[in-house]
Image (cartoon, rainbow, N blue to C red):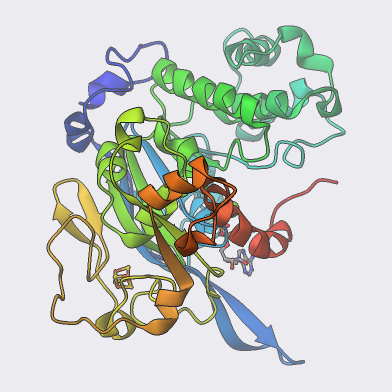
Length: 422
Ligand SMILES: Nc1ncnc2c1ncn2[C@@H]1O[C@H](COP(=O)(O)OP(=O)(O)O)[C@@H](O)[C@H]1O
Ligand code: SF4
Ligand SMILES: [Mg+2]
């Protein structure tokens, strides 16, 4: 219950593996209802609005005290926008955000100021998010200055304590960002985010820019700090493997919508949305028990469609191998099909088909994805010299890279949004 994850020096008695049931019982910290963020597209001298980028297009979820909610999806799905809107760094264009029971959807900057202490964000780019002309001491102490807070023992002592807390040295106080590696800079970003003892930390791809070897260190640090400080996290990632071990629940986003939201064990053991399944089959399975199971890999082809004019009905229908006519015409609602597992799909996996009579496969969608039996893949791996006829396509290694490839197409668009500081 909520007492177990309370503040400051109180250590959470249970480990991160504290059962999912407990997370269901916890108090809701943040509630998001029908959230929308549409960016207007304007043209001409009169700057008339001719359309909108529907980056976040009606999503509902809640974050409970002390839990970690992972948010995953390919690049361009609206994850960062969602993060910026729930922290009110950007204004939503629709829906409602409630923090600790208070409606914060339209709070003015002045009214948001006291809440800035409680809601903090960690950014993706550890290089661009730290001002190169400021010392580490000045960067980490900024929240105290902005909020007019004087910590016990003084700002300098508190900043040095924070640096130690994130695994840096108090002597780093007078150094500059360029003297640090990417991993260390992300630790500095974390120290700054934690300065005012926030209740909610939204981390937008906190390790994507780091070497794989350092990613685990930073994720583990965040995990340890959560236990120590009773933090609640929303951790955004494009790669399921990053959030897998630290999330209590995972929300899968596709084109501005949540398509599946489930306890993480349920999501990994039996995903119900075809898109989740496709994302997961791109992740190599280190678990020998699962490796032996007969399953197939789904290789998603093509890019995420444009959020300016998303596909009708189910937005995934242009890439889904299970799509039928109803998928093209009718948007599936996010429903709790199993306890702790919400899914938006007419033909979910591992569950009774919602529209079994509707069997017309759309050819386009069929071409957009490909199912490759695990057996075929294993054969391939054994005999690389003579590829099996059915799988002239990808090898397992290439399959694992498939989502990255579609990532590239949106990188340019995304870069223009991120602060670069260079
Ligand atoms: N300020 C903005 N103006 C216009 N379009 C934007 C803006 N910010 C993001 N977008 C668009 O919204 C969509 C979602 O972007 P983003 O939230 O960055 O996705 P993700 O973090 O999942 O990669 C993209 O198509 C992106 O180009
Ligand atoms: S609703 Fe249809 S198109 Fe959408 S994910 Fe389910 S089966 Fe695929
Ligand atoms: Mg992003």
